[in-house]
Image 1: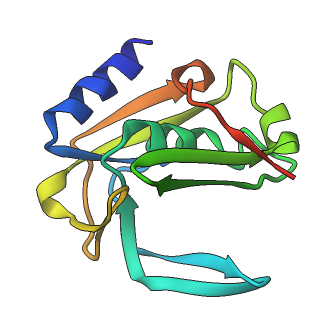
Image 2: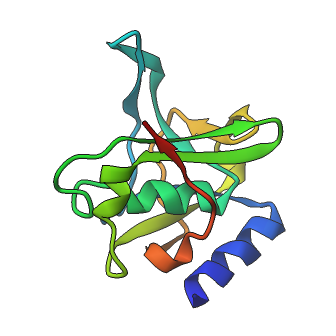
Length: 147
């Protein structure tokens, strides 16, 4: 829980944004993000590094990964009416255990531009100022079940 407290402190400072991943990464390069619309894989903007001013958003993304969910996963997060929302299938959540871990990468906010209230992006490679390991118990937000 020390890690969670550190992330909360950094979030309150307002100078940082966060990216969650199941992988250890030293430098991030822009990647093409996709959205699924009507069963079609649609590119989301041009290649970028996506991050959020909300640590919980990054923790969720860090924990839902191929290592922790080897049978596959379906999850999403969003920002609706000023509130973060989290969704996942029950099969996804059933694969998470107390040992499930991931990494939250902390970036300087000044190197990103705001896309929406919960999402910032950079079109240039970025090195995180720190990496914080997180575990399942670091995420305590409610998760709606996708049917």
